[in-house]
Amino acid sequence: MGTSRDPARSRPLSANVKRLMRLSRAAPKNGKVIKVAREFGAQDYAYCHKQGQLFMEAAWMGFSMEDFAPLFMDSQLAGVFDVSFAAAKGMENDGLSNLLRIPLLLKSPETIVEALYWIDDIIRRTDAGQNKSMALTQAYEAERLQLPPALAELPDEPNGDVDALAYAYWLGFIYRCECLLHEESSRMVYGAFDEALMRSAYKELLSDRLGQCDLMDSAPEICARLDRLLVESIWPARSRNQRRLQELETHRSESK
View 1: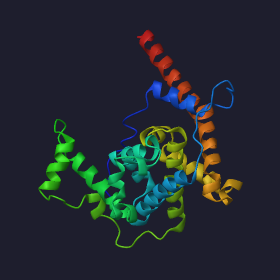
View 2 (view 1 turned 60 degrees about the horizontal axis):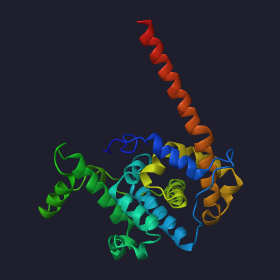
View 3 (view 1 turned 90 degrees about the vertical axis):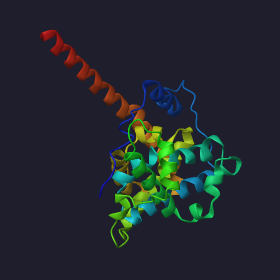
View 4 (view 1 turned 135 degrees about the vertical axis):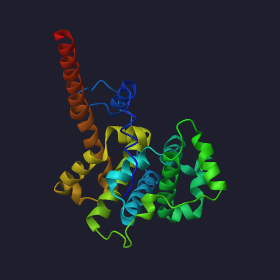
């Protein structure tokens, strides 16, 4: 199946963004930092559920989360979700929510998945200097709605793997939970927690007590665990590796 390169990996988080994310999570080792996190309500869980359904629909259609997660989380569609669900404190109060109130989009996650891959296909075929928004408009007005390769190559039968569908729902749900808890964009969250890391966390969760709880009850604690992992392990390890590489490069330069 033809897919795009990982868009989130090509746009790494800046040092300042990481600093803000670290402050938002307030590492347990630093009790002086004020923790910034919203209280979760029924509406928030409804948004997490909606995104969980969207990811599960993509898995049901035949897309692997390895391909779908980075594509969606760095997409303009995810940006609309971010603004509608977080900054506006709920899509009922936001002008952009008109896009999401369309019954077809609300009732058919498949439509959102198809739109995502159609947009991605047009963007990838757009020349470097061409206006991407104009390219999308022209493609639509010219009715050049060709089926993107990613959709054309989907299997005839839907994916009936219950485990794969359960993981996809969990992934979409927890990604949106992270976005809402810290009021961060999808791109920021994916830049911190890529799909490979989340898959590993999910496998460990299956044998944990949290894995036996309803996701509505366990999601905040799951996110708290992920946050601790990020602040206390992942970023420090990456910083050490980066310093090590810089030292090696300096040593090579000096030895020449």
